[in-house]
Image 1 (cartoon, rainbow, N blue to C red):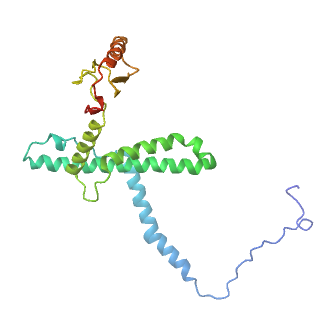
Image 2: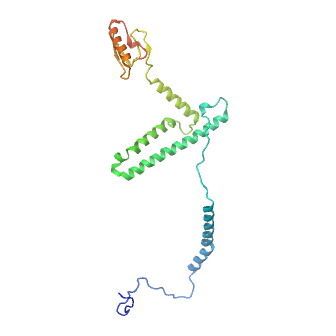
Image 3: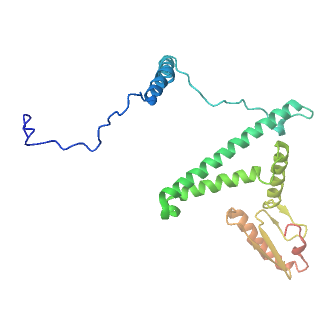
Length: 235
């Protein structure tokens, strides 16, 4: 359509919004309120903020997390050193807060992965699930069952008891002298003697020399009819 069109032939349709017509000479107070707000509050605040931003761009500040210096653990404190006790307790509480945040972050990542993957979460979120299981188990092993009033001392005692239980459940020493003369074996794993017959289950990781020694011992065991291996403390 040319610019010098005939307005009589091509009339512009009327707008949908009607033009407001003033029916009174009284001014609208909303206009005065908006102008007052703009000049009294909005404009000064905008000017001050712009000046502060320009000043900060010239002098940038870098913020980092506060890094505390590591102090001796409670197990390293001397007896009666209450200052060391206090510092170790404060360090333990900070470490517990950090571990809690680690567990929470891993849990949020797994929840986001489940939300993102939907029905395929068991295949595509297996790594997140395994990581959450590991960090949860580590947190439970260290801070579990301590209660609300848990502290560094109770946590240390819990770790000590756990280490004692693991030592009790460990495999007995490999080289043992059996008073029943059932043999001098360095590869003893389990020994069952019935009617003077010794059945030795040898470790698969034993050396060939030790396996040969165990095989030679099996031939001697039938001669020991009075051997009662079930009474041995390591069985």
